[in-house]
View (spheres, rainbow, N blue to C red):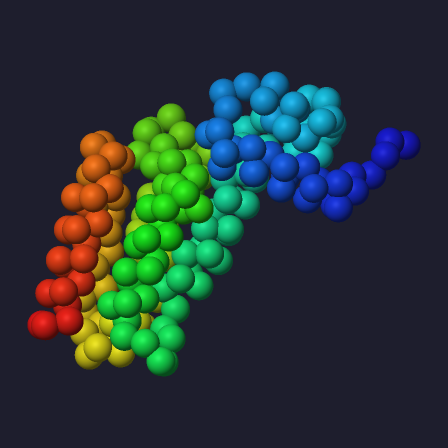
Length: 182
């Protein structure tokens, strides 16, 4: 009879692989993840079954972290205008702490990566509509959630293509100003 998988070891390995993938991108081979975890390829396969299953688990864990972090940034704070909350969320998302998520999930535009998480692109869009609607309800404009999300996504794509933070930041600040005066 073989050893039984130990969930705590699997979680530790998954966290180390996710940290590595957020810092360096999703690897094409197992070797970088082996080095990041300090274990062997055999142990990674033992705990995850296949390389693709490991990569899917890494992406799922990174997505859970992103949802928790960005979701907290977008939550309503009764003592402040929601446009201030959006400005802070934008600064975090486009700053050093948020960029790893944007870099990793920007890859989902590529079809080859879709096999690890079918339906991701749709979920990655609709996941944010609820928190945005709730926040925008505070300024009496929940129907603008799709517009706000489209502006954020468009500016993130622009930022990815040009790396012009100053221009993207100014555009987002201008957009927020239109929400305040609408």
